[in-house]
Length: 106
Image 1 (spheres, rainbow, N blue to C red):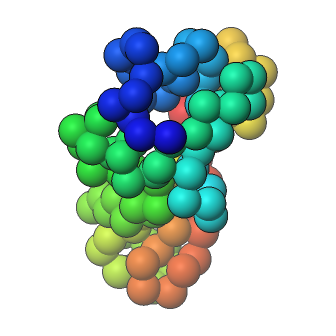
Image 2: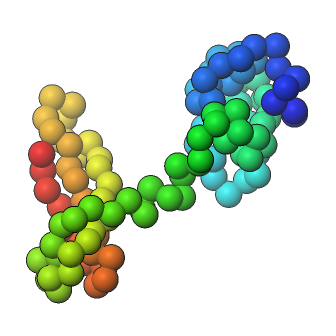
């Protein structure tokens, strides 16, 4: 469906027809609302958002952190809530050179 054919304008994370939260893009070329079946092309969604797509590039975020195994300066990271909600998140670091993984509870 053409993104311009919707009756409403909404945040790109929400269906412009019914307001439901849209699923994250996967391998498909379209995102389909689980409630009303409104479908939008992933490329059109990034145009509507006027920002580059974040999915697929999150692992490319590098920080200045020294790998404890090989000593290389530069690691990527991601976070997860592994413990209860009233406790801090867990940060997972991956060395871009040797792929060694470390974790840190914050």
